Image (cartoon, rainbow, N blue to C red; front, side):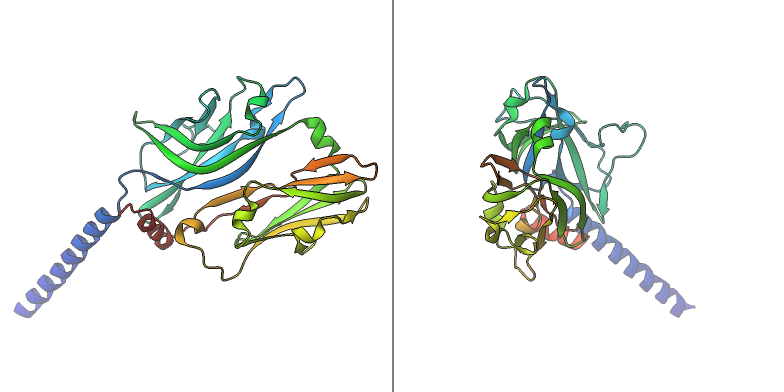
Length: 297
């Protein structure tokens, strides 16, 4: 009987010790405030025929890390660099009522990755967004708190429906993989020659993202001609075994390089139809590594 009592007390002591260690560990890794991931976007805004803004065309996302099952949510955003521009923000995709479903989140152990959906308001002409760059955001939460954080860069550019209709490339399908590789397929409407490439950020990420046209490096296509009816593919793939640091791995990228295409009559057209994306897949362990790299422990 004494042996059984000792065994019971030993097991109880072990369980208590594990519980205390677990509690202390969870307390140690708990976040004091949300951590926003950096993102580098080239964001299209559509100008309607009357000069107004098509807000749906300018919608973008901000992602952040917080404690799992955190009650407070982002309800409003302002951008200090552009105080005259108005946006609406929600942690629910626009069109979904916040009261109809729990806050969308990707939970990994004690952490949660959340998305803030941001949409320009149609209060001003779309020309105010052209060539506008945002690098900071002030966030307002449902518990009346607020914080201002760096977000990387969101670079806006504007297009009109007429520009989209007259683009020489016609998109018809795309594919993507869990490793972050994407491919987009287009039909050439009329004969054009690729005469220029511009991106705010493409050179910065050239070491770990290969962007290709028809499986050949992008720069090798400068000066080459595409024939009417030809199918071309634009693809981006991650460079294998490229050693990025932790913060770079969690930087979200959505780029649309501007291609200058010259037709047979010498008229130039610009197209941003190709899209390059990269985002790290989230796990508890790599999120913990990210929190350490941010100095939040």
